[in-house]
Image (cartoon, rainbow, N blue to C red; front, side, top):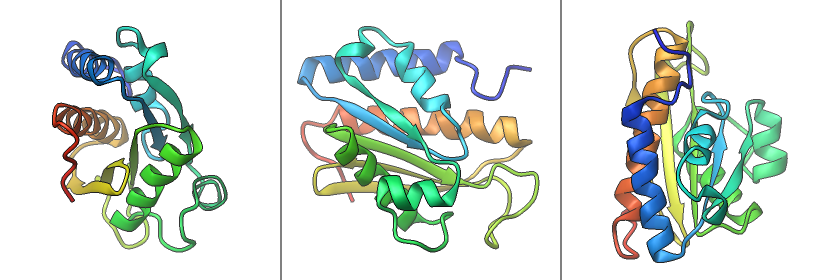
Length: 167
């Protein structure tokens, strides 16, 4: 079994494709992570020429960090609205074209009335953003791996579009 945020061949391939798209379009990306605790940033940082397109990230595990650093409205943090605000906030904070954010419940128990495995992932570019809700199975490490992989896929899907980021 691999570690919670392990860089796998499949996830690294996604990150490499993201790198190519970011370099081609001269765009930058920043990440805000809660339950993944830096896993997404680790993957992006391992990709080619990441210093040219990856601005960095904020690990906002505590709700107070989401509120004070990323500008999230106080309240529940396992929500689509929180993920969207985290993505917008980190893009603004790091002067990035695209912000990606993850928030959710890794487990093993429920939080905020949401079952373990509930994850919200947001990708935001300018005025456009997209949020997905997922329910991943497994222990906390499996949830982190699945959430990281899906965030990479969402970022790639957004980055290959030519300026079109669906709501």
